[in-house]
Amino acid sequence: MADLLTHVFVGFAIGVILSWRYEKIKSPHITAIMVGAALPDLVRIRLLLDPIKIENVLGIPFSWGPLHTFGGVFVVIAIGSLLTVQEDSKLIFILLMIGAISHLFLDSLLITTSGYSYAIFWPFLDIHPPTPALYLSTDVWPALVSGMIALSLITLDKFR
Amino acid sequence: MLPSGRSRAIVIIILILILFSLFIWHGTLSPAPEKGRYPGTDDVVDDYNRYVGEYVEIDGEVIETDPVMIKLESGDRTIELEVADLREEPDEGDRLSVFGTVGENRTIYVSNAMIRPLWRYVYLYGISLLGAVWVGMRIIGQWRFDKKILAFKPREEPFTAKEVLSRLKRVDDNG
Image (cartoon, rainbow over all chains, first blue to last red):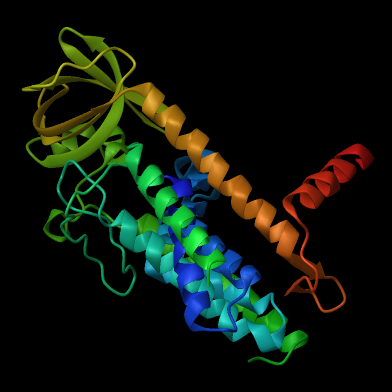
């Protein structure tokens, strides 16, 4: 997974561009895309709640992995959008999904030692596609580049 | 989209149950190299001998450099492996990711490896925290939770970053 700041910058940039095209999309909606772009990293909960230990306690197989797949974020986002007012929930669902898909897509480009990425479309498709290996989550430049893009969009936005 | 109240609560409960079933289902998945899912660190720690002769994708901390040894961790269990055929020269404390074949006598033969010093991870978590704080501040400033209807709503008058900080401070002071 790329660093969270990069994901949030990308979500922000997508939001700003969409706000130019769709009047409905205002600042809180850009935030919703950013939240969506951060959501798949909920999978880092495994650093706090070790799935192996959960398996030992519950006696059943367990993995936080779905949180970082299309199927898992779909369900999380469906729950999240039901916690917004009824007239907004459809729009919020779409915005959160846009953010989350940007995250899953960016992470499918990460360098791995096997050359294969992760099962992005699970459980709909159980295949780890080959990765184009563009960057590492620990690289510094993705946050710099995405930050610069976000900054230029803010500047452009001011002049519109 | 959906009527509020009871039916909304029922749908949310069903979705939570679906999510939990996904967690269990994902936990049952076994390695499938033909799908690009190679045995990982947890698998190798759990049953090393089962994977002898197979390709695995593992990572761990470098604990010795001559020969290179890494420590794999899974839950409370750890194993130490010698890393053979490594072209790179890691330092102690680096994280080493390896794609390679499992040999007998606790040795892994590298096909492809990647070394990352610890500070890279410090950077990753630091910068990620910054991202989380930014999103958190925007949520607090622009959204509110309406307790009457149990739903998030955009604020009519969003807070500035300064107002968010002073509100957070007040909550902190009070509790």
